[in-house]
Each structure stands twice: as C-alpha cells, then as structure tokens.
Amino acid sequence: MKHLRTLLAITVAMTFLLGLTVATRPGEVRPTEPVRCEPTVLTTSSGTVTSSSCDGELASRASSVLDESVGGVADILDIGSTQVAWLKRVDVVVPSSEPELVGLVGPAFADMAGIAIRDGAGQWVVLNRTRATALTDLELRVLLRHEITHVATRDLTSDAAPLWLVEGFADWVAFHGLGLSLRQAAPALTSNVTALPTDFGGPGRDLAYQQAYSIMVYLESTLGERGVVDFFLQHASMSAVDLDDVDVPGWREFLRKSIG
Image (cartoon, rainbow, N blue to C red; front, side):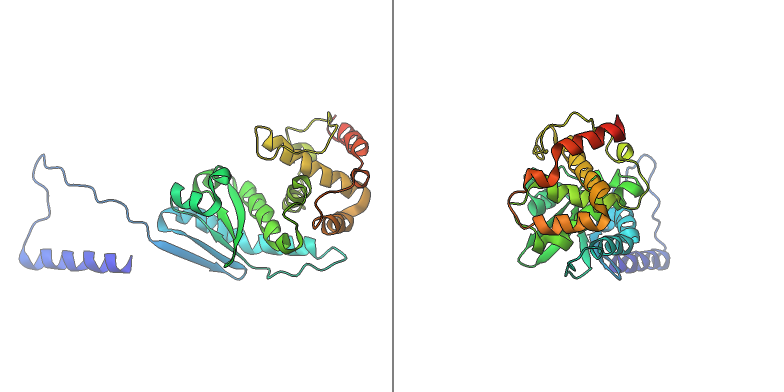
C-alpha cells in the first residue's frame, strides 16, 4: 500500500510538470485495474488476526472481540478443579480465497463458518470469510469462543472423544454468560431424544450441535458450572462416556420442562 501511494504521487507530479492531461477522450473507456489485496495482520494482547486488506472489516470485527473471547474462555476453564495449561493466546486466520481455505481446513470443513486446526507449527482458528462475514456481532463472538475452547483444551482431548462431549462443551463455554435461554440458543431442540447425538457431519449436524449443547446445560442444572468443567476434563481424554454418567432419561425430562 505504501509503494502504491508513492507511485500515484510520482505519477501526479509528472503529469503536472509535463503539462499532460489525464482526461479521457469522449467515449473512451479506461480499463479498470484489478483490486489488489495485501496481507494484513492485526495484533491484540491475546493474539493476532491475519487476513488480506480486502477482508479488513471482518478482521477488524474479529480482533475487536478477540481479547474478550480468550479471557472469557480462560475464566470458565479456571472454574474447574484442574487448571488447564494453555497459552491464553490465539491466532486467527481469514483465508483470502476458497482454495486457500480448503488447503487449510480440508474440503469436509470448508462450509463451516470457523474451525480450529492444528499442525506441527501450532494452532489457529480459521474463519470462512463468506460465512463469518454474514454473522452478527453476537454470533461472531460465540463462534470465536467455541473455537478458542477447542484450542485451549486440545492437549487434554482425545481424538476419539465423543463429539457430543467435545462440541457440546465448546458451545456451553461459547454461550456462557450471554443471558440466552436454551430455546434462543438452540431453536431446533425438541424433547424427543432417546440417544446421544452422533450426526455431526451429515444433514442433522445443526440439530446434533444443539442437542450436545443442551446436554451440557442439563449437566449444569445438576452439577453446577464447576461440575460441567470437571465432567468435561474427566472424560475428554476417553473414547467413550458411560451413559449412566449422562442420564439420557434425565436429559429428556429436562428438555421437556425447559422447552416443552
């Protein structure tokens, strides 16, 4: 951008000194220069947001709530009996194109608004520029807190851990303290549940996420906030959770009373 501004200044100066005109001739159509998107990094006390200059609005929105989101996740995890050791810092990336997005998260997750990824170099929260831009400020905050929870608890979570536990807990942290009712946060819920949700990658994905979240809300009603954090930390390293520890009939009754 600095180079481009310098070039424009020189061009204007040369035009003035040589007495040239930059006006187009009648009927002449001047070619439109393609928009140049430059890499941009916004830094906060709790991380960075890397994007292109063409996605500056989304990057600015994300950076404005990044510190609050990291702090909110840290406060909730600190409730638990076991302290979660993590950097309390998150780097967010907004890929500038669909191929770049797919290259980072893979084709299976490219339609999601955000996803936490990890490789040998570290962890990031990747935002889908199309999906994330359409979110309200509240929805963006929920998304960031959800993905930051995955970053914070990754080292404590088995790859084989039940998705209802991993995703439900991340949603519970994300919605914590927002003052939303269960119906507002999970509008697709019904009390007609007979088993724990499993369809997190198919057509029932949205409902599965909402059911998983409601399980955590149910556990909070019986265990309290600290109990939910301890429950997650106790079971996240396992490949299965004893159904007696969840109490599906109790969850179903809780939903019936909470949402009808």
